[in-house]
Length: 99
Image (cartoon, rainbow, N blue to C red; front, side, top):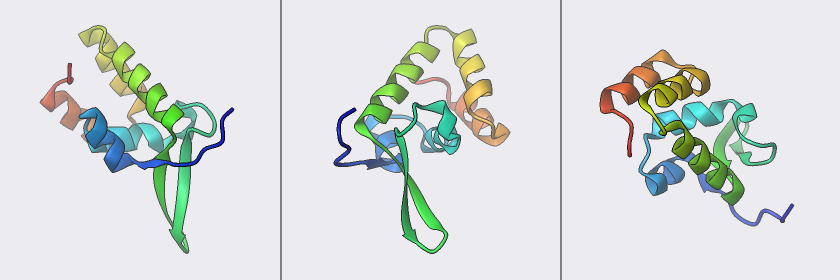
């Protein structure tokens, strides 16, 4: 495993990938959704942290999203499995999957 020298915030990852920020946040809320070490919490104060992704985490996320978009059925199953917040699921469904 290579040494991590930089990380990207969820907001920046969503922007880079052209994805819904809330959906990316929801996926990353559960650290089990990506390989160990790909999601990193950066503490900015007492009980205040931001979630970031390593380069490997971004690649893994891109692969997950690409695979989920193979069909409408796969996409809906992906949302139900990886995004626990029904409001975020509804929001993403309303806007439709990005191609």
